[in-house]
Image 1: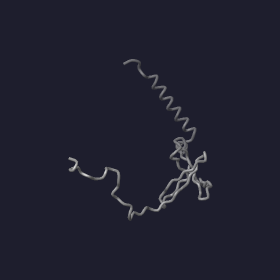
Image 2: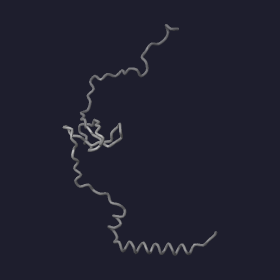
Image 3: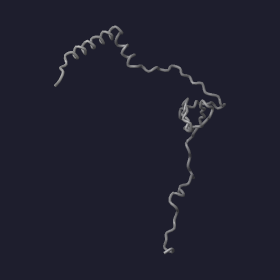
Image 4: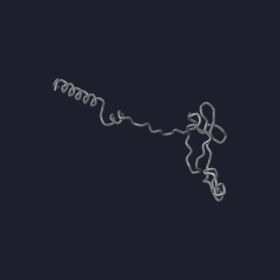
Length: 121
């Protein structure tokens, strides 16, 4: 029976593909430093915009981008748009006295309705 056994490769042990003729896309490395002083590298595509901060894959802390000479990159926050809340948008449409008047009308309506409810089925 041993003379009739099939011979072949082990599954998953070797790849039949070669790296011949393979060209990798252009890349660049960015170095980040966490608050505890540890550094880590992240590889990006050459045309990608590198973010100012990145989460460390080992510690989970946020790392800030370092320049080529090892110093932290100054982040220009510039014109950061503050998100508007619902209250801010409401104050754009109505004045404070108008809102207090609407609140009082609604409270009066709810109090009047509460007094009209019947007890039982």
